[in-house]
Amino acid sequence: MSNHVVTLIKKDLLLEVRQQYTLYGVLLYVASTIYVVYLTMGQPEDNKVWNALFWVIQLFICVNAVAKSFLQEGKGRMLYFYSIAGARDFIISKLVFNWLLMIVMSVLSLMVYALWMGNPLYDMGRFIGITCLGGTGLSLVFTFLAAIAARAQQNAALMAIMGFPIIIPQLLLLSKISTIAFAPEFTSGLWGMIGLLAGLDVLIVVLAIILFPFLWKD
Image 1 (cartoon, rainbow, N blue to C red):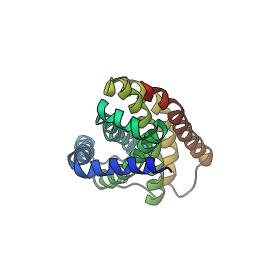
Image 2 (image 1 turned 90 degrees about the horizontal axis):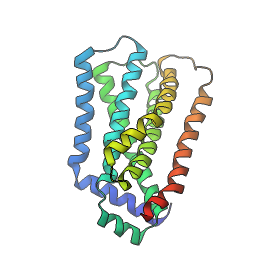
Image 3 (image 1 turned 90 degrees about the vertical axis):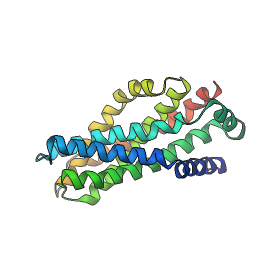
């Protein structure tokens, strides 16, 4: 990882520390969303309902957490980054930072979700690992889409339009993979699904690195 990437990641971390209201806003959104779901339907008795609700909540958490990373970058700041760092360094730093942010948000939301919605999991450790894997995939997809939307100056609307059709296959894979945490035995084809999910993540990273420089020039 180049010095430019590390420096840009540190810059984003410092902004998060200084502008704590943005992080607290996302945390409040997480807690309030889960609490409203709990008030509406209580603790679900069916494991499939519990699992489906969790991943839907993760999706909206990712949209709110990742989208702001490009919203705060104005034209003047982007011009400054253009003069000191390359496009690949910039997009890699965003991918890494949003990945770290989403991992933290995913684990915290899982703890709150299990507290209010019950814990039907047979193996919490497995589900935490799957949650981190899912958070990685979601953060990579929406970081790439947020970059495209920001350069097109249609941030929220364009990201939502492009994002949801692309993210559906990942959510379906994650819901199937996460069923292993509800039973002691492993389901057949598990490693194939994990490999497919990892392949999608690698594809998103490669596309971001290749395509973002063309957006950067605009």
